[in-house]
Length: 131
Image 1 (cartoon, rainbow, N blue to C red):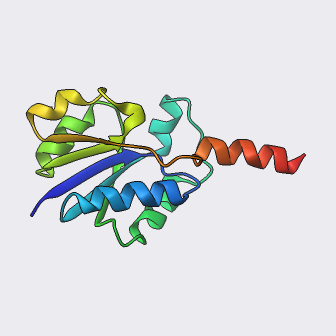
Image 2: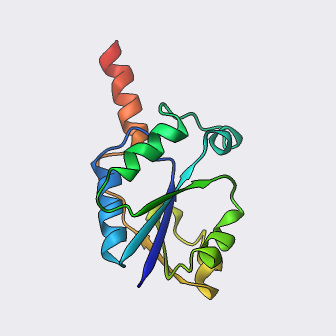
């Protein structure tokens, strides 16, 4: 069985997220999604609308996702790859090169982002709509 892992906050879920999850799952047989905890988001100065538990619940309902685990710090990726016997590490191409250090343990794939959609764009659009 080929195992794939990806990471993210996955707040305000949109078709770009679904597209990433589908393409990640297409690379293997089993997809693990590591979701940033509320505490980790706080350390990154990132604010999510939905709590970790709610984001986890939403992701678990998506057919491409086989397992959801917490992402609690930047350094856990190597341990996750080892512990979960990961074959392919997947991230959006806005992270290109940042996780190449994992290539000694698994394949690293940077997928192109879905154009014209992001959580940041949604948040900006909502501010405009609210005015």
